[in-house]
Image (cartoon, rainbow, N blue to C red; front, side, top):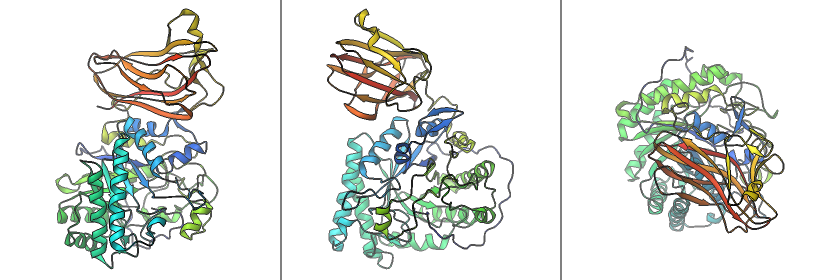
Amino acid sequence: MRRMIAVALAAAMSFVAFAAASPAQAVRDDFYMGVDIGTLAEVEASGERFYDDGVQGDALQIMADSGANLVRLRLWNDPYSASGQPYGGGTNDLTKTIALAKRAKALGMDVLLDLHYSDFWADPGKQIKPKAWQNLSYSQLTTAVRTYSRDVVAQMTAAGAKPDIVQVGNEITNGMLQPTGSTSNWSQLGGLLKAGIAGVHEGGSGIEIALHLDRGGNNGAYRNWFDNARAQGVPYDIIAMSYYPYWHGTMNQLRTNMNDVAARYGKDVMVVETAYAWTLADGDGRGNIFTSSHAQESGYPATVQGQTQFLRDLQDAIADVPNDRGRGLVWWEAAWTGDTSWATSAGMTYINDHAGQSNSWDNQTLFDHNGNKLPTLDFFGEITGGGGSGAGENVLTNGSFESGSGRSASGWNVWAQSSTNTDAAFRETRGSIHQGSAKFTHWKNSAYVVSTYQSRSVPNGTYTLTAWVMNGGGQNAARMYAKGYGGSERQADLPVASQWTQVSITGVQVTNGQIEVGFYSNANAGNWINVDSVSLHRTG
């Protein structure tokens, strides 16, 4: 989706009664309360910070802790100009996508991969072939689609970030890879879809396929499209929808459509794009899509309460789909705060849309303009059991080393092979820091062997240990570890990196109610590591 300069669809919309919140109804165990985070890496790189009740933290971790259980990640083939200029809007190449997927997996979240089959935004108004595919014949294009889909999934799988769902095309209401894959030629569109789906299954097993249209309240459009897909023998698992109430009809129209297509095609339905405003204020001062007229059309006030009520009503509609066919929802660009633009000048030139750089989505996020988590996020946990259930919460004390006195960090212990080397492990507040104002360092101008560790009593279950690190290299050993939990010690070597890099150990099965986690260095003179944002989350 690229809604930055979209024209709101004129539609007759019923006023939605704004009522007090009611308890969330029971849903299927695999019901998704997801977040789209396509711009997150660029937002973080721009210096934006995120907070939960005043405590700074990782945005994705805050959302997982609140109950989000899925991330949606768009992928563009080659989002760079011929001279290497990024297109912006996340510049979502495969490297960034894998990095974000690994972060999500480390937090116990599922991943929905959104294949645009384009170098930049793809939506009903434009489905531009990638630069490398512009001159391919139909036969060559189907081969390219299949090979690309296979290779992407295989690389994600090899990196420990296999997607759980793959969306073959983005808002392909009018087709994809146009003009070759237009809905005016369903034989070719069907062939391209089947090629992409086959490639996904060749790249990884056990992955569900979603086919995605916009206009979630338009039942006629869905019947026409999926009747044609069925006639072409296109195999899939999920009917994916975009639903923005100010563009796509009333909630009752959405209900009617979901109920009908779930029964007509025997498939699950999922709203993979939705959002609503929590304010009419403009965070970056360059204009927003959502205005007072959209609130009037939709029937919910542009307040945090109005946003939350919209989410409650939407979740209720999806959960009401007969035969448990309602699969869940995804909030589009939940953390797109600050002034990160939908496109750079290179990106605008590529798609011939010179609307100007802006973030016109900053009043439809799940964080306010200062990065504070909005109460709307707490509703995610009401549905998934997160946000207070114990699952998804960091069980470590002082994981970001913010609390401490001098060189000591509260909650953390230091072991040294020699008592003369205890000073090689210390908390510090200078230099590059991942989050907050402190980090933990191993360094000394002579050889040393030390570890920094924390022992915790925890409920039995499956855990993931993650941390952000930098490492100058040269050590005999530098690793993160988990031990004393009832199984063999687990280790992850710390990569040599001059920028903050996430490391993780997944699937730690605690069986004795306790665990020790830490960082070990067997180092030569002058070797160093920095550690920050350490978390231990229960994932099962």
